[in-house]
Amino acid sequence: MVEVVACEGAPRDLGTDQGTHCRAALRARYRGQARWRRAQLRLLAESAARRRLRLELRRFYPQQAEMLEAMARAARVPAAWLRAMLADGEGASPPADAFALAAANGAPGRGGLLARPLPADAIVRRRRPENGFRSVELVQPWGFAPLAGVNEAGLAVACAAQPGGVARARHVVPAALLALDCLRRFDRLEGAVDWLSVRPGGGRSAIALADPSGEIACVAVDGDGRTVVRPVDGPIVRAADCAARVELEKALREASPRSGSDLGRCLDVPLAVVESGRRRIGWLGARSARGADHWFEA
Image 1: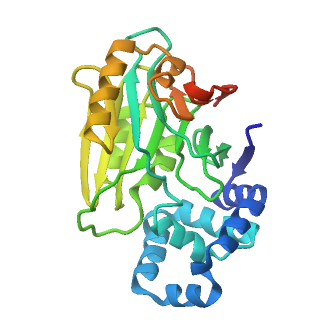
Image 2: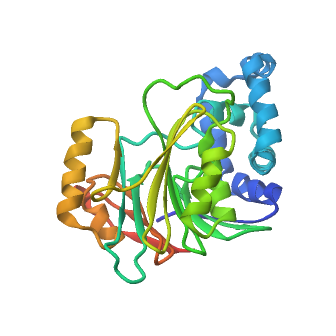
């Protein structure tokens, strides 16, 4: 059974809804991490890096900061712990060994397609912000940025932290949090790409985008650097291993995916798959242990 949480209203209401629904999961994770005992949290709260992250959140990401604090109150866990999770990348978007995006070969209504591996603890979040587009997303219970999502206008995103060193950055808040703004603010890919290219944020991640026109792009974040990757000959693939990337690119070119299910068959792991044209997100099981697939519309 796929767990669904409905979040509606102002940022504090969105955070309260998620924190209330996911309270057991957040408290269990907090208790299970001995390094976040209260004495250590007091030390973390005094560190320059943690103060910097808290200040940057409030200055550049005020809605996410308000959501975080409300989630902490509702779940009865320290906000400092959630910020520390965010600094470590766990509240932004976890790594993925590989993920892919493809245009739907110009098929009417298909739009662009996105896919990324899905952690076992993912849930579905239906978000209706006070101002902006409503969306459906796959997130972890303590997560802010979506693993993948699509809004009612058909703009789709998929996010993943990327392995490797990070160039020195002026900002410590993971830029993956901007994916929330993309879903709330934009109905087309170009506006979202421009937003991601100029807004402050750090870390090392890839944010894939698609819209109903079939346009796809990936904004690669490396510290202060931003690189916009667009398709040249076939799909775009991001993978930690070069051999895996080449193999997946070949499989996708041969498959010529026209739907999210087609794209999902190329990755033999549980997947989040987004069809921007149909404004829906799929929860797909692995081919080798295929369970029921679930689809959710924005």
